[in-house]
Structure formats: structure tokens, C-alpha cells
Image (cartoon, rainbow, N blue to C red; front, side, top):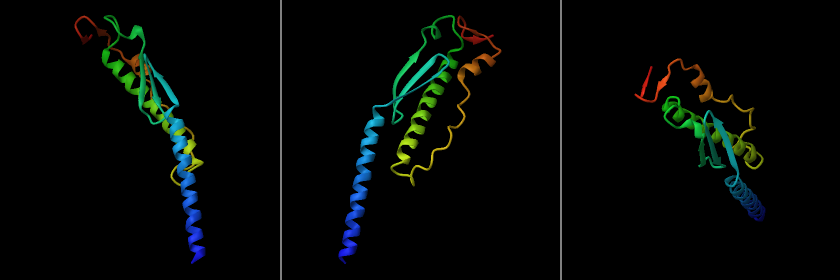
Length: 134
């Protein structure tokens, strides 16, 4: 009976130690920033994937710029890429603490097609004065 109690006590200590490591790493990652840029948009997220900053190039707004819908695509792509970077780093760092929950990280998946490439492939010109594609 004492053996089982000792075993359960060791198990509890192990779980408490892992929980402490998870708390420490979570706090550390919360303060870490991950950045990605797509076209005219640059997004910054924290280690939990929360958007903390978004920068749009000054020359991306105004009366003589490309289709405004493309800016939205660039913003979404930048945020997604920054969140993917945060998720990859989380998985890499948590793997050492919880290998069953976070399997061995694989090589990074291919980056999503950039919004800039989509803009360069666009044949139509945006007319900012009448709000239509020409």
C-alpha cells in the first residue's frame, strides 16, 4: 500500500513540475513576437497568435493605389503567416515538455502564396476614381 502511495506522490510531483514548466513557457511565449509581411501589410502576433500590431505601408493607401480588396488579402495573409510562425515555435518549444501532445516538429510547411504575387498576376487595372476594374 505504501508503494502505491509513494508512486502516486511521485506522479503528482512530476505533473506539478510539468505544469510549472508549461506556465513558465506560456508566459515566455506570450511576450515573444512573431512578424510576417505580405505585400504592403506587416502583422505582428504574440506567442498565442493574438494580433498585437498591424502596419500598412504609407504608399498602399490613397487615390492612386491598386485595388483596395488586394490590401485586405495582404493583411489576412500577413496575419496568417505570423500566426503560423507562432504555432510552429509553440510546437517546437512545447515538444520537450509534452512530447505526446506536441509530436516531433516537422519541417515548416510551404509558405502561403504571397499576396504580392497575386497582385503581380492581376491583369486588370483598378480605377480609383470610379471604383471599378478596367
